[in-house]
Length: 391
Image (cartoon, rainbow, N blue to C red; front, side, top):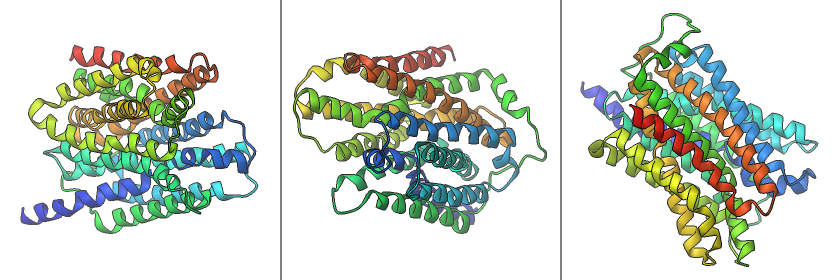
């Protein structure tokens, strides 16, 4: 028992840091989109396509991983390591000087595919190590995802003499480091129970439980909003600055808004211990949904500090419930199916993000719709709350 406690004390920080390193691949393309547009002569709609290609790759990847039950049948740490190596290599593909929009989308798709073996598998590794206090552990883990997502914007914000290629080199190096740390310093968890055989029906069986369905559909509503918001945070800031002639460091404030979710994930994890996981998730989802509905009002306010504070509150609420939904998913399925359950729920959730991102992309193409476009994201929280109230 003493060994298990000692191991636990250093395993979680390594998983968290590795998750941060590897998920920095996620928005690496988004953070340098202006440079990619100029360098490869792309059109201005490329942001939506490039972001969606990562999501689509992740969706296909999670579907394949869930169908083959890979993280339940094999060592999740090895799966994580292999995917981090390939993810780093595909991310470096953006440096190819003869890239076209097709090859850029392909490299981002493959990077997203590899992230399917990193994000949900990282949660599976945590679940194998922390049977109790899983909610708090996943809160720290997803906080690392948030920081990793925001990190490329921070690199870009300094406006040093770094070329855009440096963002790619940095994120790929971090992904490689994260994979190595997981492989060599994180053993298979003491609570891991490997599935004994290949079972394609697991992806359907997990949805038979009513509590699992409630958590899953709450998560799906949350996902309708989350990645569309993250993708278009720079657009929110740029639109406000153009409407009111403000001079903002878009990259820096994009980092601050997205990274604020790191703090809220951790806070949410602690609050859920006393307030309850489901109740805390409902509170977070309600606040983020309200922010969607209030967004036109804040576009009209000329004060940049007030607008940024509003986005920070939104950025905190939009992600704080994510680890709580993942915890509810993991707790409401059979132990040997945790990896598959987390992966298939991620698959469906990220499929939904494709629709919301593209819908927002279309709405934002009409400048008259821009101040009101983000209200459509409230549909996700509303549907999610309906299903959570049913349980």
